[in-house]
Image 1 (cartoon, one colour):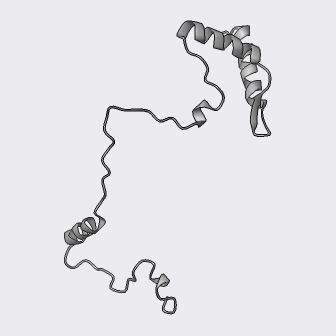
Image 2: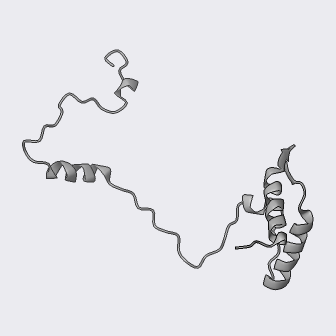
Image 3: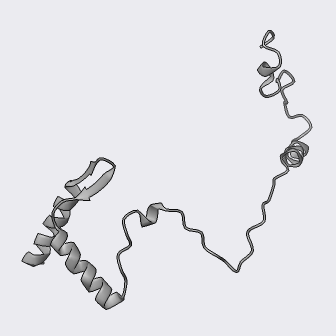
Length: 112
């Protein structure tokens, strides 16, 4: 399988571009390959009618209006779930009796 010279040059340019992206004073500057990028942008805009978004477009918050209602917030009842699990255990199951309440050290530092 033979790869065209033009495709190889584009691949090399892409690799160089990915290596030469430098962060300088909170601005990302891409060096080289601008000519190829301009040609690609013009082709995509002509054929697909898509324009390149401005820098930082995807890092901004976008709020969309929707006809669908917001999803319901479902709060789990952990005490009921724990009671169900404990009820399903066999009668001779070993449960610890020496457990302490969670974060009891906040209330009584001396005994912790």
